[in-house]
Image 1 (cartoon, rainbow, N blue to C red):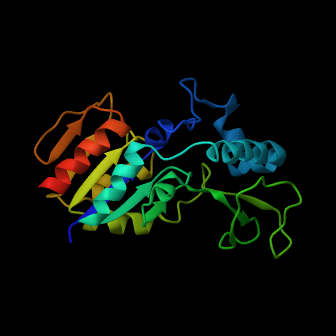
Image 2 (image 1 turned 90 degrees about the vertical axis):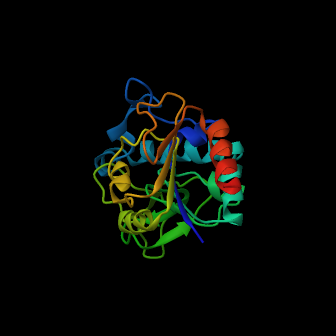
Amino acid sequence: MKKIIVLSGAGISAESGLKTFRDSNGLWEGHDVMEVASPEGWFKNRALVLDFYNQRRRQLKTVKPNAAHQALVDLEEQFDVNIITQNVDDLHERAGSKKVLHLHGELLKARSTANEELVLDWHEDICEGDLCAKGSQLRPHIVWFGELVPLLEPAIELTAKADCIIIVGTSMQVYPAASLINYAKPEAQIYFIDPKPNIASQNNLKVIAEKASAGVPIVVEELLNN
């Protein structure tokens, strides 16, 4: 069975109504990114960081998967599909995708500040005073700026084995996620779905100049009918 890797980013979730956080001025909801997404921000103002992610978690409950998420599920009928996402939402899973690797963590999980391997399912607000079994404050299970990306190695291994790679909702400018494409097999077929692509189709790279909800179904139909 041919192996397909999907590299997804904020653009696919934006069409479901999720804010992409970062505005053109580089602020996230009016905050400097380092205030709400870094260990330094956490130590400086824990309440602010918790509130920021609590708002994201509440918003996530109000949105649903869109046509792009749903189309990717159809690929699993004929292909071995793994999704490597920069997104921290659960929209891929809710649509029905079975193998999803979250490079940057998951919004619906919390983890211990004493032991990063102690991770809990967490669908409500994380409040000051919410403690792990070891008695330490819980924090969002999010990879912040300046922290290691623990699932990068598994993501590299998956990408290196892929016969086909679909890039959607990401400009592939955010590292280390952007480096994954460097591990693709030379012969791998690559689809790049972006409404304003900065590259053109060439050799085994096919550019689909559409937003995710329109472009993903086009690619899925092509792959299923080949």
